[in-house]
Image (cartoon, rainbow, N blue to C red; front, side, top):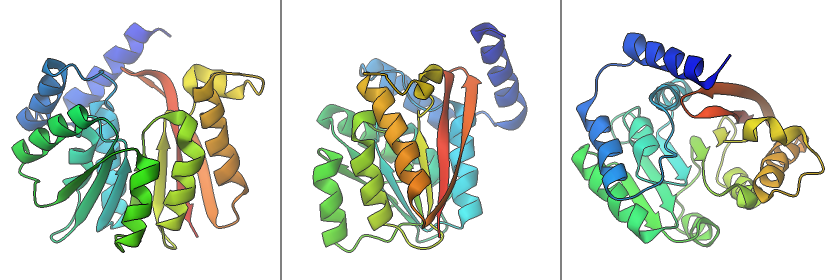
Length: 221
């Protein structure tokens, strides 16, 4: 199997299961125009997040790592009336682009963007009484996964769903001797969630337009 095959299958999935969406297409176009890295989740992955939020019955969503808000919009669209999403973004330019995308999607009254290093803004969420959150998506810099997961657990409740993305690292996650900070952060996510007695978790390897990677899916007990 090759990346060409993976891309073809992703295109088939999108053609059959995901409706044309000018708003989301516009988000990706604006992100590219503004020079954001093309590391958004794929449309199939975005739809998965949307469905997971719906299946969890989530009313409050927390995202760590906004980029241009493509995944944020997918999740926020799954919220019921009165639902809220908070997304955290380190880069001020990315946050500015994200806000423009959020407004273009008509979700300015649903999504809050907080700017700054997430490990600095997460304590503020707790202090503001923003939690507990029903669904938490971690998709930021991998070396800080331990801190992000720690805060995700602090801001959760029994039944909270946590998704931690990009943890397979093209298969290198199995290399216990790796000195790559991203791999070490991915391994830390497995270790922390795997040993916490409050958490039931699994992981899925994925291939597609974003290459070979995967995510951890966890539920807090």
